[in-house]
Image 1 (tube, rainbow, N blue to C red):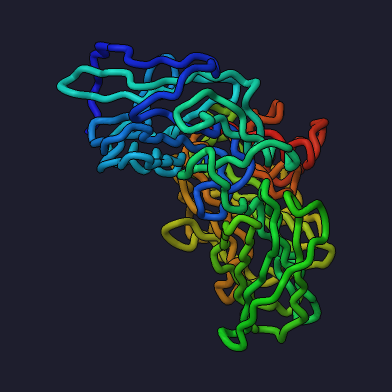
Image 2 (tube, rainbow, N blue to C red):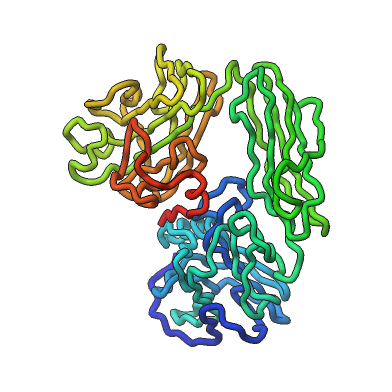
Length: 467
């Protein structure tokens, strides 16, 4: 269990603001990424907090015991991760935001992740022994070196700082970030995104599987492995449909399948230097009709006072004013009879017969109370509550056969006195109203701040700071 420290600081090495210096020997902060724009921790689910990372390296000649080593963040030197085990000479250890969250949960140290601020911050690598804290290495950075998928690292390992920006704004020209590897070595290809269209195909739909990937050495080929109902598996080459070999999008079209068929697929990307990256297996079930229904807004933590009266019944209630908003983002009406909303523990609402949602229409489910002043499809949870946890939960929309239509997992951003939204409506990006300048903390059963000048493309380059 981490306890409060009376910091007795002995500065063995201190780097400042990307200064140039000699190659350091021993454990050092070797590379870090404050502003991820895609998946980096390997779960192929982008999260601006979970996908931050810090890499340390052993540039010395002897094995290092890491059991007393800690990563600290900010001028207040808040502990965000504790290492364990040994690090051999020339070895690397990469800590992701998701790793930091797990360590913090297990050690009672809050739930902030690595908390690397895009506006600038300080990272500290220290040892803790008998209440004394010794600084081994530190780095203070500014916003100038922060961008989507841009890392800052020492080149060579332990040496002066430089920027690795090959994926910056999806078109940088520099080096590839190298988490868990030498900054002087060739990185394996980075998969920015694997997507399919349509997301929920019908028996009449061909399905385009795409992978956006890049590598400074160039992607030599992308392959799609897929099977239908776990039979007749194939692995076939994908074609470059946009961009270039160093950063582009490859695609392969799977022909229509029968209603009820299940298709599983995985993408493999190779570069010219022997690097290989594979996505996890994904899949879809062929529907009777094509669907484009999405969870569009979630309020787990209604603000205090009457301002938190989201259901407009005149009473602010922490349970009744929770809500989940759904929108039909497609071009065809969808019958939601028998569909379900569930959280991480159980089904919270079942839609009854007659809930047919037109294109663009909203469906909103409140935790309870007496929703007032809404028109259209507004309901209260059929089980009596939504039970949305402020500290984090998994919200899923399922069809009548318990097939997954859409889902969203959130963490402590759920406890910020405002809703979590797709912005703009139906987009791939989740954020908070305060992050794009909305004056309203929530907007049930209506568009998410239609007055904002931001668009989906501009928001794609902005990091949602879930602190």
